[in-house]
Structure formats: C-alpha cells, structure tokens
Image 1 (cartoon, rainbow, N blue to C red):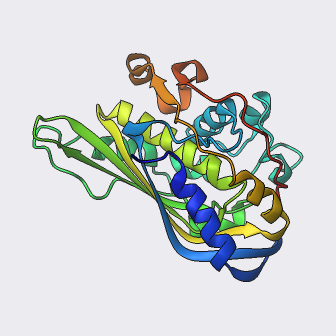
Image 2 (cartoon, helix red, strand yellow):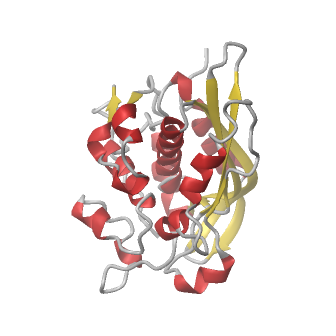
Amino acid sequence: MVIPIKNYIELGAKILQHGIKENSRVGPTLALHNQMLSFDLTAGFPLMTTKHVGPKSIITETLWYLKGTTSIEYLEENKVFVWSKFADKNKDIGKTYSYQFRNFYGVDQVKDTIYRLTKDDDKQYTDRRAIINLYNVGELNEMSIPPCIGLLQFNVYWDQDGQKYLDATIYQRSADFCLGVPYDIAEMALLTSIIAGYTDAIPKNLTFFYSNIHIYECHIETLKEQLKNKPLELPKLEIDIPRLKSLEPEDLTPDLFTIIGVQKDRKKYYFELL
C-alpha cells in the first residue's frame, strides 16, 4: 500500500540529514540537487495532508497562470497575496509565470500543448513536443522574479482498451521545500487535470525533477515538527469537464473545480516567505 505524501516526508528527512549547506540570495539553506518526486493522480489529488494547504489558493493561482497576464489583480481580488511583494505600485509583476504560459515570444503555449496532445488521437500517436517553457532567458530582465518552474512536458498514451492517459513532467530549477513545494505539487496536479480535461484524457503520472531543492535555515525547526505528522488519505478532485471544454483556458472559473475530502483540522504551519 502506498502511503500518500510519504515520498514528500522522506525527501524532507533526506534534505535535513544530507543537505549541503548553501548560501542563497535570501539566506542560508540546506539543499540537495537532482531530486525527484512522483505522484499517481488516479490515487487522489496530491494536496499536502501533514499540514494545511488551502484549496482556494491552489485553484486561484493555477487559474491565474492561465490568464496570460502580468498583473496580480486577479490574485489579490481572490485574497491570494503571495506575489504581492514582487509587484510594483501598479500591481504588475512583469513577464513571468502567467505571461509566459500564454505568450512565449507570441506563442500561446497552453493552446499549442492542447493541440499537440489531440492532433493525432486517431492514430494514437504521442507528440513529444508538448512543452511549456517558462524560463524565457530573453525576457528575464522584464520579470520581477524569474519562474522557479522552468519547463513542463506532457505525454499521452493509450491502454489496450483505448483509454487515453496524460502524464506530466515538471522541471524545477529552484524549489523551496517548506513553503513553495506543497503548492507547486497541488497546482501542477490541477493544471495537468485541466489539460487532461481539454484533451479527453485521464490524468495519471505527475513527476517533478528538482535541480535544487532546499530548506531555509529559518524553516528547519518548524519543518521537523510538521514531518512528525501522520499523512492522511488524499482528497479527490472533481472537474465539470463539459463546462471546462466550453470555455477558453483564460476564462475558467473556480466553481468548475471541487476538491472533496480535504482534512480541515490540519495545522497551519508558518514558514516565512523569503
């Protein structure tokens, strides 16, 4: 039996025990390079169960990615303020995450990915170029902060009964284990499920490759307490697929998504945003 989120707990313990001491731009860390986490999305929605992670924030930020905007107004209107410290007085964050999803030198990468994952359905071919590149080197100077998630790749496959599945691979250049990673996991699971909805597939394997995954020194003691918690059963994600497919990605609304079985008694551990 696979214990949900056990791999996250094991990786946290591994970083604490074997992490390399590194001085970063915003403070000292314990870090490991070239690590991996993988989740079977048919087993449940990988929302952290050893602490509270808000489903509303997950949905809001994921939908913001799809809007193709440089503004954080949508986030703040929905009471998500994690990006506010990076925005200017006009609530503009520059050509980072959301903008690059929909406008990588003029290319709408979301629609291009959906097209590549559906164009050969009759032949059951997989296009290995269904890639979303967020780390646009040519526009880094126009971003208030560059994306930590650098690249997403999607692959489809069919089982012997003709059922179509979608796998997602996420390459992350930098990963804040305590604060960012739990949200990244859930948001990329939601995004994969959205792409699967548009492409008539079942979301299956979600895999993260971390070039540098780290624990900030000031987070260590709080993380040790969190990792003692027993992981619980994962919640389930439900999506109104017919309504989703009738809308453009930038027009998706939170009411399309329901996360069932969220553990409401999980402690809210505080990790400072550095």
